[in-house]
Image (cartoon, rainbow, N blue to C red; front, side, top):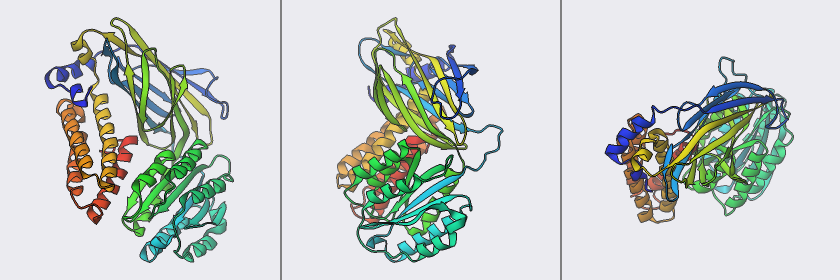
Length: 477
C-alpha cells in the first residue's frame, strides 16, 4: 500500500478522530534489578495501564516512553503494511541531573587536505575542548593521516592539560586519509576508562577513503561495548555517506561544518551530551505475534532473535533526550482473529542499577470491513512513519545527486513532497512539522538543480544527510 493510500481524505479524516477515542486496558510491569544482573529478576514495583487501543505507555527510573501501532486492525486476506513506533525519553524527573564522569577520545584528521586554515582552526577547537573539560574527566587524543598516532593515551585532563595542548598545537598536516586504524586506536584507548564513566569517540575528517565498511564495523563494535561514536565532516570534500554511516553504526551524532572553526561548536555539544548522559545500554525487545513479520527498523540497530522476537538497540540517552524508533512490519490476520504484542525496554542508569519495563495489551485484529480498518488507523503514527520514510529517501536523493544521478534525486524529492503533503492534509496535529519538511525539501530540490560538484550542490548534499539522519532518530522538523 502506498503512503498516500493511508490518507484518503474524507473517510480517513473521520477515522483518525474515531481511532483516538477507543480505549483498552493494556498492562505494563516495571522490574528493577541490581547493576550487572541482566534484564530479569527483581520485584514488581510499578503497574500502569496503556493509553489507548493500539498504544502502551511505560516508565521507570530515568526513562519513560510509549509503544504504539499504526493500526488497530488490518484487512484480512493478505499481507498488510503496519508500523510500530517506540518513543523514548530520558526523564530524570525531579532529581537533579548529576554530571556524569566521562572519557572522550578525539580522533582528528591531519591529512594533507586539512592543511592551512582548516588544521589551524581544528587545532584551536580541540584546544578549547581540552580547556572546557574538568580536571577529573579523561581524554585520549588520536591524530591520523596515512598513519595513526596516539598523541595522548587516556589520562585525567587535570594531569595532562597543558602538555596535551602543546602537542595539539604542534600537529602538522600531511599525508593521506586512513580512518579505520584511528578508530581502532581510539577504542583501545577507551578500554582503560575508569568504571562507571560515559565513553565517547568523536571523529573529525575532511576527506574520504575506500574503507567505509570497515570503519562502520569498528563503530558498531564500539557501540556494542557501550562506547558512542560521533562523526563530524569538515569542508565540502568529505563523503557524507561514509561519515554519516559511521555515526549511525556508533549510535552517535553526525555533523557537517564548512570550516574548521565550527568544529568547536560540535565538540562542545558532544561534551555536553556526554556529561549529561543519564542512561546507557537502552534496548527493547518486541515479541511479534503469529502472522506478523519484521521488515526493517529506523532509529535503532535491529536484530531478529528467533521465535518472532526482535531486539532494538538504541544506545545512551542524555537528560531530556527524546528518541524515536520506527519498525516496519507486514501483518496477515484472519477476519475475527486478534494478535497481541508484548515486549520490554531495558536500560542501565549511569553508575547505577539496571531496569526493565514490560508492556503489553497492544493488539492487531483482522477484519473484512475496510471502513473499520480505516477507523482504527492512528494518524499520528502514520504521519511519523511518513516523515521518517521521507527522510530515508531524502538521504538516498542526496547520494544519487552526489554520484550524478540527477533524475533519481529529483524523483525521490518529488515523491517525498507528495507523500508529506498528503499526510499533512489529513493529520492536523502533525501538519506543521510535515509542512516544514516539505519546505525544506523544496529548497533541496532547487539546490540539487545546481551542477554536480558545485559548492552549492555539495553543501546541500551534506546538509541534507545531516538533517535527515537526525530526523530518523529524533524529531528533526
